[in-house]
Image 1 (cartoon, rainbow, N blue to C red):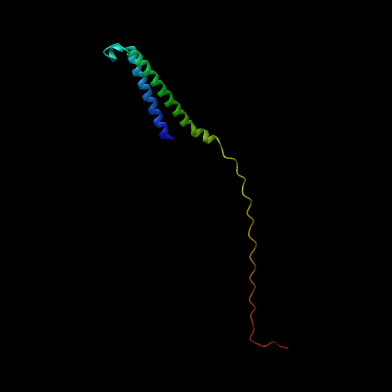
Image 2 (cartoon, rainbow, N blue to C red):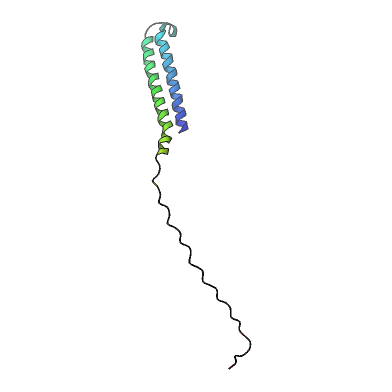
Length: 107
């Protein structure tokens, strides 16, 4: 996203520079070209091209710069909490060992 914003800003700056040079060609045709031929018409064409490049660059920059804000405002749907975990059943009790006597039973 930042790379696209950088390239779009760079394109907008180039478009503005082209437009400024075109304005100078229109305002002072004798300085920018030795003959006064079609210098003003070329300047007007160049101004139109520079304006289009600048507008496209600014539009792309603003669209990509604001896009993450739109993504952040769209919260995902809430997720239901998981069901409670039941405790495991109690372990069976160990039986006591009975001592066997070595004496025979008395009758």
